[in-house]
Length: 229
Image 1 (cartoon, rainbow, N blue to C red):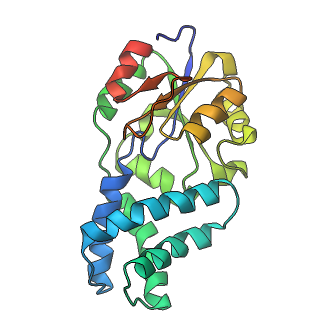
Image 2: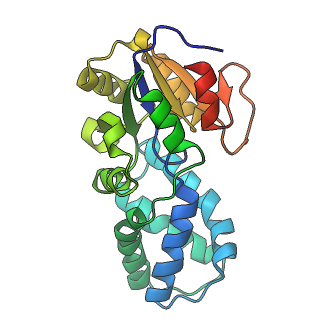
Image 3: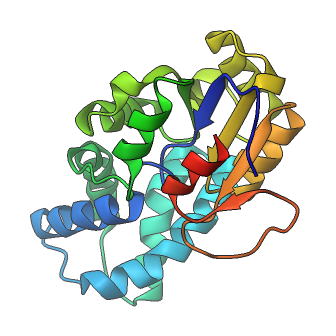
């Protein structure tokens, strides 16, 4: 499907452009060594990823605080793995994780190529539920910040995707009309449903091939955007 009359392209950041899984794994490898936590990294990540995903869903739905997300996901993971890790070390890990994460800036395949292709044709923007203090660092350190006219975070908006207000704020900042805007992201509820409720076009980036969404336009690689826009 090709979208016509689009002027503004809004992207999610983590898991859509920025390779969160790879960068997160590299970060854990470093901070575990610094805090002398002896754990098999691959086994840890296998346990951690679904726990982290669930915590983010709770955070997205305003059921837990940022602080609970940062420490709770680690605490639960170590409990599942039956590892004795002190609350102080968990606190240290949670702080170091946020500090260290933007130092690794692997992008998903075709990110730079697609941004180069789109930037002369459209105004590009970011809408993210990620933490304010590190999202801009991710964009700067990965050298993709210049491609984007605006960046709207959930902490800035006071609500998280899929809440209508964050999309409205992003469109106001960018002087974009919803009918001439499209949202691209890997989270169906947050990105696709949220954008549709705001009157925007939407495109589900099913990079991890988790599920089929017959009711939405879906891509599995960023390069497919060249066929849609």
